[in-house]
Amino acid sequence: MARFSKLFLFLGLLLIFHAAYSAVQHRSFLKLAEEEYTGLPSDIGAECLLASVLMCVGVVTMVGRFRDIKLTTELNKRTYEMSSNRDAFMTFNHRGHSLYPVLGSR
Image (cartoon, rainbow, N blue to C red; front, side, top):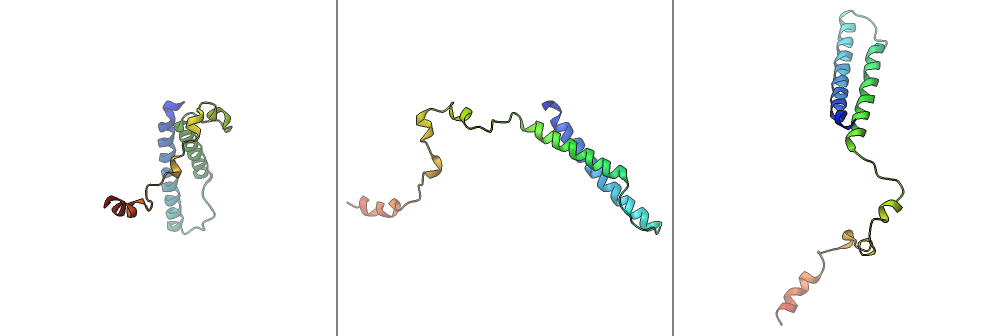
């Protein structure tokens, strides 16, 4: 199924563009025939629905393997030293660079 994910996505995009083109053609036909616009034909709606399903399947299968919602499976793989490692709290833009010229002159 993962092999066909890009194909599903491409076909879905192709179908959605075709449905948009068909809708524009339908509106221009109604203007030329001087008829009232009452809505899109059902085949264009079905084509949009099929394109949406194909694109959703393509995107979901392209992503790959999902991770579990429970964090215990992910946290069991980590050691204690790795759990206290927090890169987001490391800051290198602090007032030490303004004190360096004072400390370096001694």
